[in-house]
Image (tube, rainbow, N blue to C red):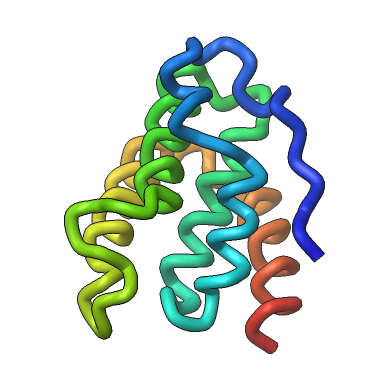
Length: 123
């Protein structure tokens, strides 16, 4: 089942960010590509998603997160996702950069939420 995501997750980032990122598209892409993309990419994407939903995460951090997640769900990116082995490397680079950018907002609560979702998909 796809997570119910409301548009309130990114209220103040401007129309441009909202056009590129869709919470529903994120959950669809993540769920459909979880096994192919791999546990690490999914885990880090979930860290970003849950950290961005926290009120403590500043607007600049949320903007970095939603930009990286928008790139991840973008059907036409630098290396198309359907290419075996290398298809998700560019996505992982974008996700890793965003994780490094907001690492101070990725706490144990965020990781616990991500782990619960990971267990339901991978275990």
